[in-house]
Length: 131
Image (cartoon, rainbow, N blue to C red; front, side, top):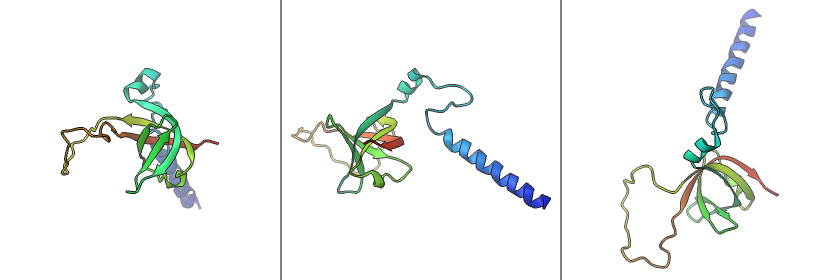
């Protein structure tokens, strides 16, 4: 009886530690007991956008805002349930590539009509449907 109670307490403690560790990933929470200020969020380029989630032909998901801005969405969770819905997302916006590209790539030296259409990568931390 006591052994089963100790095992149950151990499981609850491990679940609590896991929940706290997952919650620490979000930028809204304090890191190491310090509060994150608005100026620090600007350093991370933390933003919130409202728009419609659209699936492209290659299977990637993008957010199209009312101003016709397009953000390529990256997330750890599955966002396919939001396709076709108007949503509000919050996360980190990256307009520059941080990692080197090892694949073959071609660049047109003469810009055409479609040039200048840079896609912005948006790492989603939170998403909610807007009515």
